[in-house]
Image (tube, rainbow, N blue to C red; front, side, top):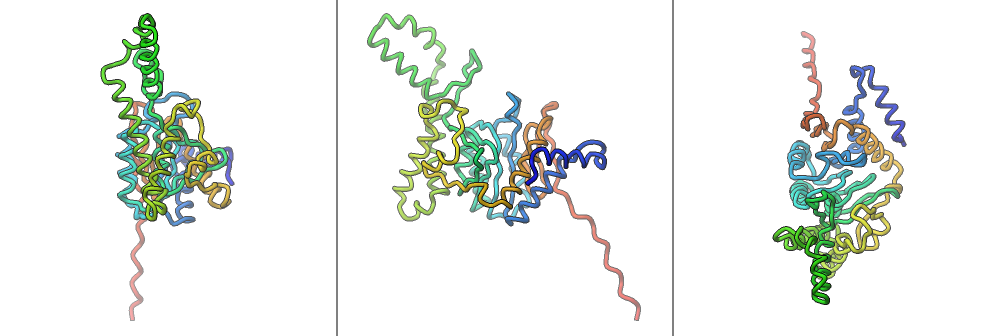
Length: 330
């Protein structure tokens, strides 16, 4: 199995023939084609450069739909291997992406080679199954709010709990209102309603997707049981109280306890080699590029940090064939 370092050596070896720059696109596409040839399934990757600190345009947003539209072109379906490496982002955007994926593909296998967090976890839970290694992780899906004064993320569930705590303490001791006024004044109009709606959206979508796809066999025989199972799983992933942090990892054994269908990446050595080769090649391609969405046919939608430019790499076309030689004269 090529390691991260071995893929880097391979990339550097391509530089002399590529104008002195490693052929990132060529190496990635080689491994994407190899996976497709191994599994005979379409392949889409969604990779963001988010593990080296805050960077713009790494979150899942509605603009990613343009990338998905670009890489959908030419895919035949109905089976898809979806790679995702993302910190998450908008739940509404995740909903749009999942709905779009499901217009094309009947069976979606989601690979999480390292980490798919928050809204990326929501997308993973919309697959028919997830493939994870021992080191791979999902994350909680409880919605977060950027607090205007501090720009820090706060769980929307904790905002609601804080308000209820304020009501209880003021009811018990009216003089406590003086300590609570500065905090309560920071609550924008309709803030609590928006928190409730965001929580309902994330849990509701995951429950719906689990019942429709991952738990579809149970849904076909016992819909009530499937919806109960899906609802319990959604509650687990959405509970900010059950997880110490929004960034805490949820590993495969813990996810399985809640019914999530997960295949161990290490079970098939050949598949593992193919998957991790793609993973290393994608990560090494990030840097000046903060997000890559691409398919195994060579179509790439990339967002570069320099001036936040979008780069489109068209699907490579086969070389023209020479016409056959005319038959010899009789």
